[in-house]
Amino acid sequence: MSGFASSNDLAEKVISFEELGPGLYGWTAEGDPNSGVVIGDDGVLVVDAQATPKMAADVIAKIRTVTDKPVRHVVLSHYHAVRVLGASGYRGAEIIASDVTRDLIVERGQQDMDSEIGRFPRLFRGKESIPGLTWPHVVFHERMTLWMGRREVQIIHVGRSHTAGDTVVWLPKEKVCFAGDVVEFGATPYCGDAHFTDWPATLAAVKALGAEKLVPGRGRSLVTRAEVEEALAGTAAFTSDLFAIARAGVAKGATLKQVYDEAMGSMRPKYGKWVIFEHCMPFNVSRAYDEAKGIDHPRIWTAERDVEMWKALEHGTEMKSAEIEA
Image (tube, rainbow, N blue to C red; front, top):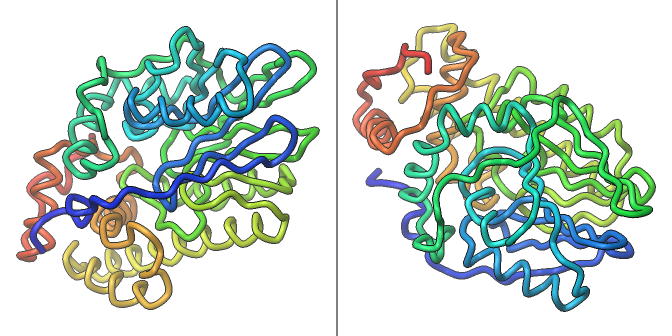
C-alpha cells in the first residue's frame, strides 16, 4: 500500500444534467461529487458548490443552457472541501448551511481542505482559484423554508450520518430530494467523519420524506421511487456491514490493521465495484474503529494523520494518536 488510490485517478468524468421536474436538475458526474439545481420564479438555488470556482463554472454553464436567472442561493449539504470550496464561483449568491456545518468549518475546515486536496488532486481542478475557506452567510437550526416565488424549498438538517451537519434539500410538492452524501448510489460512502450509530435513523428520516426522485451525493440521478429505495437500502447495508465488523473487531481486541483486513476481505465481493471503494475504505475503517471504541466526535483528518494511517495499515503499527479524541 503506497498511498491514496485516488491520487492516480486522473480520468475526467462525463457530466449529466438531467431534468427531474420543471426547473429541477441533477448535475452528476459518474461517481464524482454531484450538485443540484432548483429554478425558482426569480432566481436559482444550487445544492453543493463543487470543489473549486473553476469547477463551479461548469455547473453554471449547464444552468445557462436552461435559464438566464441569477444564482441567488447555494446550499451546502455539509462541510467537506470537495463540496464547498467552489462557492465563490457563484458571485453574489447567499450561502446557506446548518449551524453544525458552520461549527465544523470553524473546527476543522482548514485541515480538511489541506487533506482533501492531497488525496484527490483531480477533484480540485483549478485549485489556484480557491480564495480560502467557504463561510455561510445564513445558518439554520434543524430546518428552514425558502420560498423562491411560488416554489417551496425545505432545507433540513436531517441528522448525523456522513457528517454531523448533514443537510438535505426537499421539495415537498414535487417530491424531489437532493440528499448530499447521506445517500449514495453505486458509489462507496465516505465515512471518515461519519456517525455510524446515527446513520440508520438519518436514512429513515430521508425515507420518510417519500421522495419519488433523488439526487445522491455520488452516482446518477434516481428517477423512480424504486431507485430511491435501492439507494437508501444500499447505503444502509454498506454502513451497517462495516460498523458491525468494526464492533466485532474491537470487542475481541483486534488492531486497526486486523479490522481493515477483515473489512476488505468481507466487503470487497459485495461493494468492491462501487466507485472510490479502494480510496474510501482506509478512512472508513479508521472511523468505524474509533466509534466502536467509543470516540463519538470524529478525529480531525490532517495531512499528517493521512500518512500515519497509511503506515498503520501497511505495516500493522498502531496509529500514535489512536486514542486521542479531536
